[in-house]
Image (tube, rainbow, N blue to C red; front, side, top):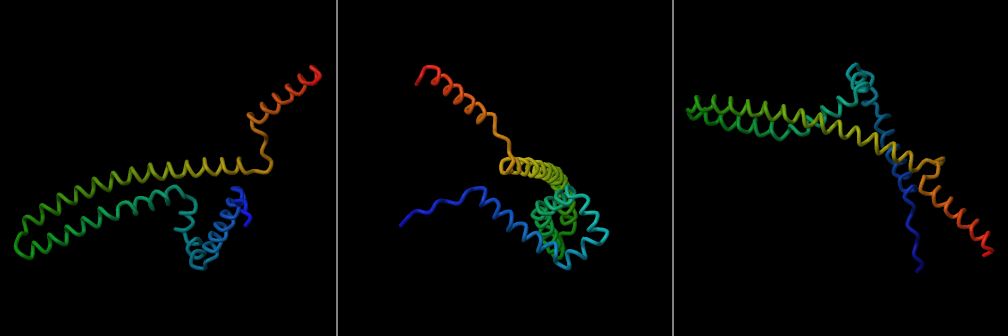
Length: 161
């Protein structure tokens, strides 16, 4: 059996871009998405993508600490039913302050991560559009190699080789 050549990277990237474009188009053409994007909240979110990414990362990362806090509240409420009311107030206060500190820290982390994500997206998209553009100028390295080959060719002609 003859081995097939692996498809080129640019063709794979074009196929991936086409599939992602179709997926994005199907989301954008959904009637519920269109109705949401026409609302005032949708227009605000459309104008502030960095804020949306930051809030999404914050909500995602804060789910576990909030879940632990709610678990502790439920457990101490069960303890209060047994008569430890003073202990319940202390535990909920300490846990509430701890949760506040954790959520503030997660807010800063989500802000930093969304900034890094946005910068990475911009850099990678610019590099990919530069690398795979059809009218890309030759790189400096290729120009140096071509000029060196031309010099060797003229030197060999002078020597009569």
